[in-house]
Amino acid sequence: MAVKIVRQPKKIALIGAPSSAAAFLAGSEKAPAALRAAGLVERLEGAGYEVVDHGDCAPRLFADDDEHKRARNLPAIVAGLNDLKVRAELAVKSGALVLVLGGDCAQVIGLLTGARRYYKHVNLLWFDRDADLNTPASTPSGRIDGMVVAHVIGKGAPELVRFFGEAALVREPDVTLFGLERLDPPEQEFLSKSPMRHIDAADIQAKGGSAAARNGLAYVHADAHEFVLHLDTDVIAVGEFPAVNVPGSAGLPIADVRAALAEFSKHRNLLGLTVAQYNPDKDPDGSGAKRLVDLLVEALSARLEAPAAPAPLPSEPTADAPAESSSETSA
Image 1: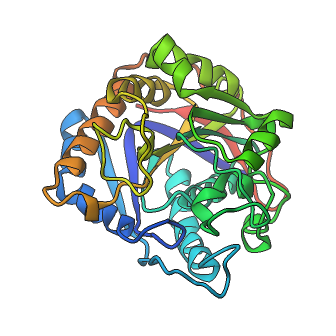
Image 2: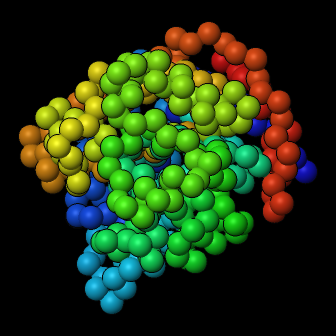
C-alpha cells in the first residue's frame, strides 16, 4: 500500500550521527553533542521551527584499521549506517525536513537510504571542497570519507555499494558537486568523463553564493525530483572556520556559504541536510560550534520565509518498497 507523505515545511526532524569511523581524524563523533550544547535546537525553535529530536545513533569511532588499508573501518561504518537508516526512514516519513548532525561524511548514505524507502528518485547536492570520488582501488588514504560520492553512485567497497540494494543510491547525472576545489588525479580523470555536474569554488566566488546556488539547483534537477543536501564544513575558508579535519588553504567565505545554503534551504524539494566534519577537538573554546549554529539557523530561517509552492508530482514506488502516493505541503 502506498504511503502518503505530507511535507511539513515548519518542522525539522533532528538526528545525531556521532561517527568518526570514516574520518581522517578522531573528534567529529563529538559534533552532535557540541552543536546541541551550543543551542541549536533552541535557536531553531526560536526561529519558528517545531523540532522533533530523534536522538543520537550509537557512537562509531575513528580507528586506523591497518589490516584494511584500502577501506578502513568498514564494519563500524556499516553498523552506524544501519542505525541511522532506521531513524532516517521514520524522519522522512514524518514529512519534516531531516537534519542529520554528523560526524563523518559517510552518514549521507544513511539519510539517502532512508529517503529512498519512500522516493524512487532522490538526487544529491554535494556541498564540499572535495569530490570524494576515490575508491578502494584509487585511494591515497583508505579513509571512506574520501570515497563517499563514489559509493553513492555505486563504485567501491561492496559493503557500502550494496547497502541500499540497488546499483546506485543516486545516478551520476543526478549528483551535483558544489564548491569543488581539491581533486586527486584519479578523481579528475573520472569527473572528466562523467555526466556528473560540478560548480567550482572559484565560480561561486565570482557569481556570489545565491546565484551559484540557483545554478546548482538547476544542475541537480531540483524542480523535478526531491534532493538531499550534504554540507562538509571544510568548504568554509579555514580562517573563518578552522575546526575541521582536513582544512585547505582557501575555501569559500562564510558569507557565500550562508547565501548558498539559504537558497538550497528554500527549495520545496529539499528532503534533508547532513552536516559533517566539524571537529570539537579543534574547537576548545566552542566558538566554532556557535558559528556553525549561527550559519545553520540563519540559512534554514530562509525556508520559513519562502512563499508556498505547488506540491511536486507523486513519485513512483521503489522496487522493494512503496513511495508516497502524494507529497502535499502542509503549514
